Structure formats: structure tokens, C-alpha cells
Image 1: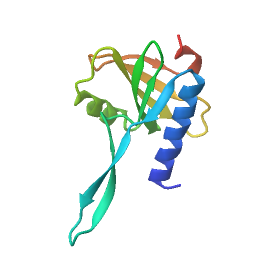
Image 2 (image 1 turned 60 degrees about the vertical axis):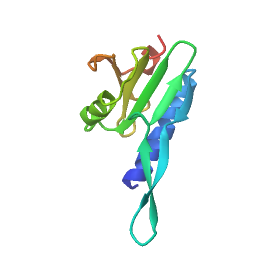
Image 3 (image 1 turned 30 degrees about the vertical axis):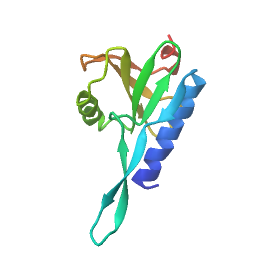
Length: 126
């Protein structure tokens, strides 16, 4: 599976997982067309506000960045930090390991520091 297919798979898996937890979920990617000489245009996917997904229920709104493995969480955090995210919006970095049934979730407060790391999916809906 190539990187794009793997990314799409884990975004969809996260979307479905959040929906089972009672969230309404939307994809946050948009396609921009970039000129590439001689009148050709190429499509480029861009995350809005650094997030792959927007999840919400009646109590909270969450910007979600989805990762496979744990290697690029710092880059995701720096990307979130470039946007003026209001304090009532949580930012989550959701990491999936190979063959895992549930993701590991790092929840960030407005200050940009991890407030907790969730391993058990049941603790997310507290």
C-alpha cells in the first residue's frame, strides 16, 4: 500500500471510530489546482487548519490529525500551532499502530502542550 492509500485508509478508519463514539465527522482536505507550465494544472490536497478531520458533538469540537505510527506527531503539533485555534476547540493527534484495534490519542490544550494521552478508546467519551 502506498503512502497516499495508507493515509486515506487511516483517515477513514478514524472517521468511523469517532462516529461510533457519537461524533459527527467531516473531512478537512480540499484540493487546490497548481499551475505547472504550458497550461497544465496539477491537483494538490491541502489540510484546512492543519487537520484531516473535524469532529463534533453537542459538547465539543475537535480538529483531528491522523498519523500511522508515532514518528511525525511533533510536526503535526507544529502545524496546529500555526493557526489561531480558539480555546473551546480541542486538537487531537490520533496515531494508529499496525493491527491496532483502537488508536492512541494525544489531546492538546490551547497552550500547545499535551494534556493527556489516551490509549483506551473508552476514556475518550468521558
